Image (cartoon, rainbow, N blue to C red; front, side):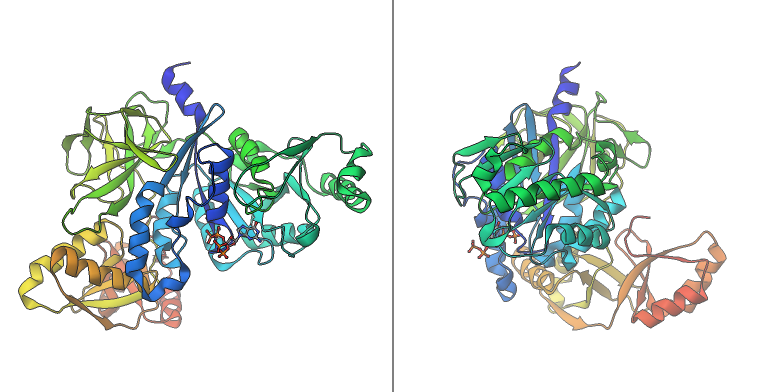
Length: 526
Ligand code: G4P
């Protein structure tokens, strides 16, 4: 086996996603704790964007500043190199999360046992399904009273539209919660509950031994044996391939806060989770084992300090070995580039790295050369696909509030959109620019950044829009006909693609009915 192949087999690159408050931050932290990457919990917390801060986004940006270091958390666990990609918890940054999902090979979804599947969980699962991303579900907060485990499994299956298979099982719940049985390894590890450190444990492997009664009590021992029997009867044996194909989600139970069920999750995860997967480009499929380096930018983190207008572009390595100071091709502009200080993210620390492998994420200091979706290669012209823009949820006209600064405004809008802060559509009818976002916060972010980084002033004007959809048809006459008929509602996105602006669900439905040969897409990738 070559060095490259060995390194690839070690890599597990994934993201934890959840509806806010289900326990993503706590779980991330506990994985780092069990992985030995940190020694006391509390370190990741500082990265959390508090949902209460909607009106105070400066505070959020301050917190986002801290988050550069925690955007990617790499650590070694046994023979494995694990890369956890952080996703913003705040819903208004959902687009960031979607993009991050393009750079991972698998996902862990945290669900609150009392709340079950919530809106954001459903939406994120949709994105995983689109890409066949393998998904593991962690049901959290078993130390609180919640839905019975069997009912919850049914709910997960129905709501998330994926088959499920429990690989660990809770003993009791709420106040009576004692720990989890590891179905995957057929053993029981009990930990002393602790919020901060990993403490002693009892290991136990023979579920039929009367010792079980001594440890967890008669009632729970009986219940556990009955439950396990039922599980074996109801669920087919766990099939790793089905999981890797994105058709089956293994489910783990636990309480991240109290350290229960986390090690079971982590140990199984490293064994079954996919190594870096082949990735589609417009030209061909790129395999990680290929000698020639390639990677794409999936996130750009701007420095909020106007005196240092530099960014960090996050590159996911897709194939070959990345080397510091080697010359790589920036495919979009055809330039060769060298990077003297690429950074790696290990256990929340940033440090310059000499080489990196498929699955790894590195940070490239940037002064405006990159936009989201850009490809770097050893020379080949490849274009990675799959960084979709989603139809935004909120729309406003952006207007210039300082006529002397038109140039600055346009440049600012251009660059912020390249960074992926929001999307811009230009209405073909009146030439006005419309900014589309997923949350109110982005409008505030844009206004502030335009002023502080570009010296431009903007104001927002309301527009009544329901959805922006990308349109496409094989019938060019029909397409032209549609565009003519809907002239007032046509716009183009940043790449010049046609977008239909529907001002209500009804209008959209009628358009779909009247023009059956036209496809309406809600993401920019189709
Ligand atoms: P998020 O990143 O998904 O938004 O969730 P986060 O981990 O921040 O957890 C949300 C809240 O749930 C936190 O409480 C956290 O302590 C709590 N939590 C996480 N895991 C468990 C668990 O296993 N059991 C119980 N009972 N609670 C859990 P908070 O009050 O919002 O924050 P804090 O004041 O505790 O920091």
